[in-house]
Length: 73
Image (cartoon, rainbow, N blue to C red; front, side):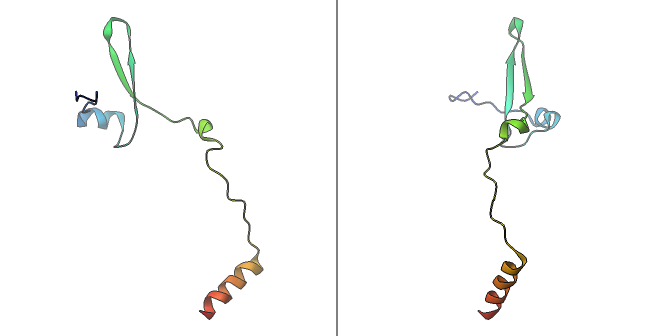
């Protein structure tokens, strides 16, 4: 363990958990000092609203006009 408390997860463990660099792991401490490690999953509902929807719509006429203007350049 590093002075920052970081550990190296062996390749076989990473493969078994199906994790990649940047993924998060959840450590759970059980009775008797036993520790389990699981790949942390993201609940898609918790992400709801975190990305602003694109509201802008464009008509066919607007697209055609943009194409015409680009062709003139």
